[in-house]
Every structure is written in C-alpha cells, then in structure tokens.
Length: 350
Image: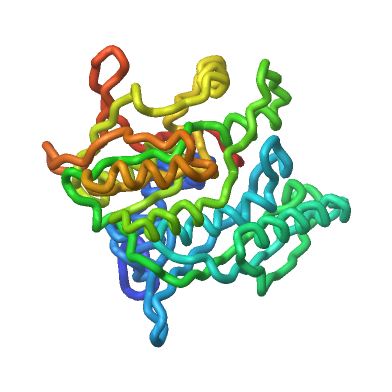
C-alpha cells in the first residue's frame, strides 16, 4: 500500500522506525531523521541546511527571531538549577545563538493531578527570577492538568521572541574559521543524572545552566565577526558540531587536548560509561570566528562568567569527502571521527 501524501502535497520519505523511541528526543541522529523526514516536508519549512536554534524573519521594519522549546527534565530540581530556570535560560539562549536580543517569552504548564502547589510556586518563582536576570518578560501562558500518573509532576513549554542584532547562521561559517568553546563540558547532564539516580561523588557536580545572551551581546559589541553560534544542549558538543558540519558541507578538525572537561565530570563519565563530548550542557556554546578575531573573542569571553575557561578547540577546513564531517585528534595523536549521537545516553535531562 502506498503512503498517503503529506499535508501540503509533500511526500516525505518513510521514517526508518515504526514507533517513537526515547532516542528520537535525544537531539542526535534519530531526532534529525524525524525532523528531516517528517516535520520539514509536512510543514513546508526551511531547508535542513538553514535549521538553527531560532527562526529569523522580517515583520514590518523589524528583524525578529522566534523559537519554542519544551522541558521535561527529571527530577524537577537538581544541583545548579531547576526546570523553571532551565526553561527561561534555554529559550533565551536559543534566541541569542541566532544573534537576537531576547525580548518576550510565553510559558505553558502541563501539570499532573496531585502536584503540590508549593512545588509549582517554587518553579514559577524560579522562572520569574531567571526572567528578571535575563531582562525578559513572560507575557503569555497556558495551564493544562492531566490525570495522576500521566505527567511526572509538570512539564513546561516556552516560546520566545527577540530582536535580531546580527544574522548568525550555519551558512555563514567559512573555511579557516576558528572554533571557540565557551567552557567545560558535561556538567548539566551529569548533575541531573546524579540527582535522579542518587549517585554520590566526592565533589557535588552542579549544572552549568546559565544565560548566554550577555556573552553573545559582548562579542558583537566588541566588533568580533561572529559567524555562527550554537548552544550545546541535547546530544552535547559532538552532536552540535556534527549538525553544523553536515549543514555547511565543511570539515571541522578538533584537538582533544584543548577541550576542557572538569576532573569530577570526567571521572563520573568514566564510571558511568559516558563520553563527555555527547553529554548535555545548558550554559555552554561554540562560536565560529575568523582567525583575525580569535584573540579579541577570547578576551571578551574570559572576562565574563560563565566563559572564563573559553578556548580554541578546532578549525574549519574544506571537506575531503562528499559531505562535512568532524574529526578529533586525541591526546596521543590518533584521529577519530566524531559522529552525531546514536541512541539515547541520558533521557529527560532538559
């Protein structure tokens, strides 16, 4: 039997899986497959190479950026943050990565029957505090309640709108660009997992959840030619770079020795069998800048929290194959390819 036409007349390629799996929400290969084979053809959306953290468009005389996200992190509270802070900063960061100044947010709450009102109040006050810190206003919202056992406490959906100050996009990445990383990797995913599973380490690992908009703003004010930026959430650093490499058709060459990972995070990842390159972050981003602006960019980043450990971790080169790829030079000199995340390492971390 032939597949029915997709809405709008587009006929997407059939999905490779008959049922949704946890890995479809992991930000890696299966997420990309779902987006490219189902959502983009059905909604007549942008081309895969133009996908970014926010959509940019003109409305009258204004250049706007628009984004949306949903948060299902478990547990709701974890060292260094909670679902409320995460929802505000995650949305603000997506706008900032497109070169936009975050302006207004919406917040939708899906609540489970039996949720303690005191817990909801705690989340709402956390969101309000994060919004004040990020200088944005939450101006619209919605509330729904589902039966006990259907929601795991509460989920939050957000949308955000911002005023574009620059056009940062994958298509602007150029051969010769330096790849800058704003800080150490893996804190958020390990912090959430440790709290969820009751794991205890010698050092408490806190999430890196943070507002990144001020960092992008300062880079632009300093005159840095920022070509593209991407925050490192689901699928982590490796998956973010893999997506950008595929979108641009360019190769990214990384040096493992320059990629910062906190000793406690590295030890936890080794114990749990995780690769910190793929572990989610909520306060880290990569930036692509021309070689001439590297020192200026590092000077700006290192003067501001949370980017004191910013470093150059790689370079953009011409592709040696039919499509872009990411390679990593190990500390002992070997080269390995870094692919998109396959499967799901850590579900429910954002």
